[in-house]
Length: 184
Image (cartoon, rainbow, N blue to C red; front, side, top):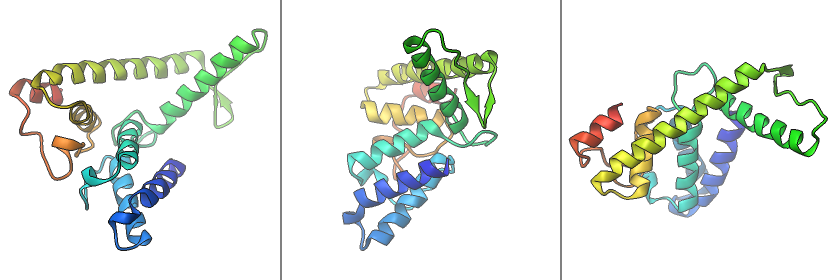
């Protein structure tokens, strides 16, 4: 979790350095926005809508990741992401080495197949709900970035999104139907 925050801050900080008076101010702003998005605090000190595409893409990825296990913050959670990636690795190893026994482990302890299945089912349901929500609110004719980040901002309880729902905007342009979908 801290590694994700650190790497995201460094990459965004150097990507936006030309927008600020010094690299230190850029790193400070990057750190605040990264922390605000990944913890789903929802505060903004700058309009990150004006940042380069790389920085905005990282912000959207952080919207998906969310907080740590046990956090009240939204998102998939880092622990589920780790289990998911380890399950993929285990399946690839099983395919390439069919006679080997692969167990997904976290903190040095093997996870039960049932625990891995629950994580995968959760992620599957998460993706289906996000995609269905994006499809439903796209009836309003907004661009893909606005729709994607509007769904991510509301589904993960983040606050701001990008474009028309960015840190200096709001969700007022959406229809009543779309607002109901976003509230769900």
